[in-house]
Amino acid sequence: MQPLFHQTEIRVRYQETDGQRRVHHANYLTYFEVGRTEMLRAKGATYREFEDAGLYLVVSEVSCSYRAPADYDDLLTLRTWVEKTGGASIRHGYEVLRGNRILATGSTVVVCVDREGKVCRLPDWLRG
Image (cartoon, rainbow, N blue to C red):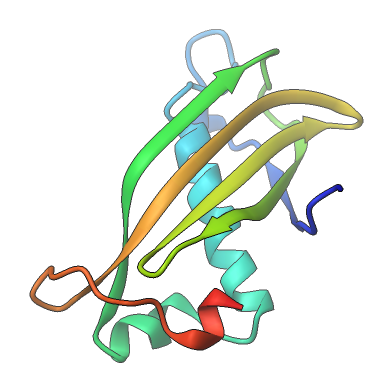
């Protein structure tokens, strides 16, 4: 079954590239963060509201596999979805595409913590 995903467009900015005008590999992790943030916004909440409630989502795992380069000024599509939700964690999956070509895939695990950094249960609305 194909997971339901959130889709975001990203235009590659010059500062995201290396000397060959290719997206530097570290920027894909930033793209993943954009995907998580926009997916949360699409659920009707903002990360700022989440933090104002005293909760934070910290990255505990990240992986990225690169298949083909993205270049300056490319219009990319970032697909983000929830692969698994636990009591205190969420595993997201990602695909970065240019047109129909997958350029990179990845995943992250974020863990919910309180202001003191203690792991705590995800709010019910975020688990569903």
